[in-house]
Image (cartoon, rainbow, N blue to C red; front, side, top):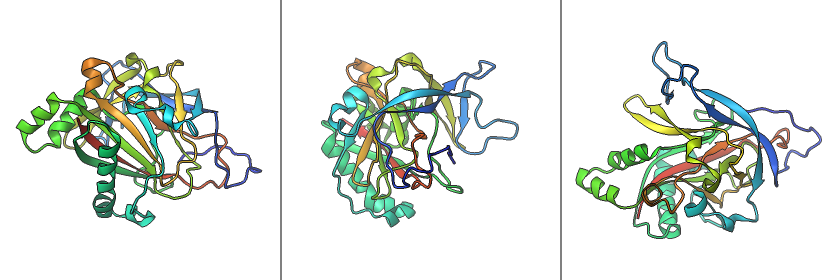
Length: 290
């Protein structure tokens, strides 16, 4: 669980907003220059969880609050949506079955309505994160991109039952978009999400990493520190706001006219007050066709 020194005179209900500077954790190569890997679950005996290094750098972050309309998926690989209604309650997120029956249909309709050209959505995964001891999934505190282009294509094949249909879908435009939201109505105070505008990220900043599941191997991307990267966050996100994070876009890969991915990470804002409400969030991962 992330901890830091805070000013005890700051009111516990304070929501950090505006520009800030924080330590973000970046990728550094394995000391032996071997191919980097990370085990999703417990590694085999004698293997480390991951073999690459992680190095913190102090990074300025700008708050997009009040400037949400300036960012979009094609340019930045991130988009901020407000005033989104939902039938899901806090209790909904205590049950995976309820998430799939109540929240998934909302996410599908949201993406179809907000992403021009989208004609088919496949929601293939979700993760609930709670910033407290004992939670199975904590906020991820290292800069990363969820998929490489190869891994994105494999996701299409993995989640399409008909191989012939999969190849047809792969011939068109396909994207992977994460839909991120807090579980609570109250604004996020602690461990907000940072993201770098894709327009500021050099392709050489990104390094493929083997993402080893028990039954298969995917690929994520580590992010090397580059002072030219423009890191952002959205202060005090509430339960009626959604952050769209594009992790892959075949059109960007083929034509180069749109952004392909957005590095992101949770971070600890040094202005976070003592006793701040823990961050609880869900990200739903979607294949978007068209």
